[in-house]
Image 1 (cartoon, helix red, strand yellow):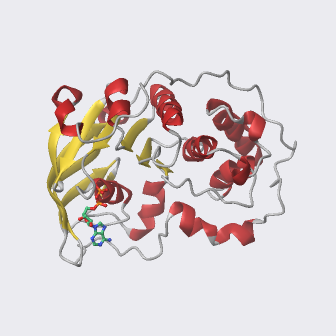
Image 2 (cartoon, rainbow, N blue to C red):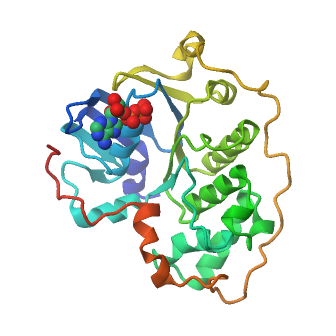
Length: 300
Ligand code: ADP
């Protein structure tokens, strides 16, 4: 093991140092925000609506820039990051969206494969990794289905497969269970836990306090734009007493065996009529746009 490797793993993966973010309309979304998230952690981010959770996630992804303070993600110090480095930095992240953001006219397989295609992976690597990812989320049998033929929970599992297929260092998920059936929420978090167990850092925003309780991970609680509690011991049940409980929290777990193998063409091709050109514009939608990022500097 090289010394570099040791140094790298000893550092936090994400660090916020006195970060402030005020939107142009004057809203102070994040203030005096300090935290460290280390490689391999699974972190829930909780807090009332409007407390700054999404802004925090957007700052990590460099979708928003802070007004002051420093953000460090992996090897990148955001005060020094160059515009051309942002796509590389983002490739260390697998992003899971609340509204799935699958490409409707593409099969499940293609939705996942596409994420690898755009980073220039080889056909062989694409076949191998897509099979792995679809197996992991238990959707090998649905490889040829289109998103509208799947339940919300299944669509989000495709979203998870897509997020992990490029082997990211971290998964960033802003309310990934917000649009799925409550029982399926457990399945999604079980899968995120499994992904985490295999070495990927997971940061997940959620409103579902029962999930947070049941999974017993680190909890970062945000109120009025700042961290008010950090770690599961401090997680105060009373804080959530106004929220509605759902079910009994018993019916969770993946509960089904992963399918063996994925039925796909021998040579990798998009199963649908979709071509790379026709979906190019979907890219910004799914993965965010890099072109408009400014170099370094502060947001106004
Ligand atoms: P949460 O995810 O916890 O609901 P957000 O980070 O979305 O909170 O929002 C924090 C605060 O910033 C809220 O007051 C919200 O209205 C405001 N806000 C969020 N996005 C923007 C924006 N693009 N422009 C102006 N204000 C915003």
